[in-house]
Image (cartoon, rainbow, N blue to C red; front, side, top):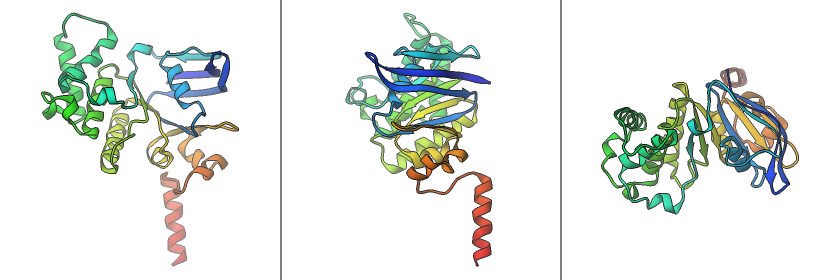
Length: 249
């Protein structure tokens, strides 16, 4: 079932085109990674999907009851986020405000926050100051906050920037678990290898050419081969490589 469809989408700023004539479809349960060189339009597309900027032409169609303010969004970390003067629980609860402001949080909102802290393994940190946490812990808090806005779709913008390799690996594992639970994921990333190892679909934006399709198709495409130094992670290709290795012995 389609969640978001872009039809002949052209986007840019002040009339300057950044993305031209893009058509993609994101279905429920997909894990889409958006990769590409700097300036190729990754952030522009993300802002369009979030409704922060309007298309120059073409359409972005939301379906299955999806609304822009019900999309969970995890932006790139900034120094302001690092120094946010609030408790973990307060930060997570603030994610409920995307569905409408109330003078106090309801019992249902508090329950949602508690459930999402449990999902992201930060329940024990709920009374800690956000700015005292490690980078990996802060990203988990912000992820729990984003989850309070949605049960359908997460959009993540370079979520592992600034994380050490162990924290990054743990974060990728957590996103995969959430995707397997039924949440659709769209992630903007420079980490093409990890994208291929985790995502079901790849959108590679390029200044000269682009690609959209399954991860398997991307690995075997001309543009994928230029950017990757890894074997295809799909089961069929793993079995093929295994048979080749056995035959060579």
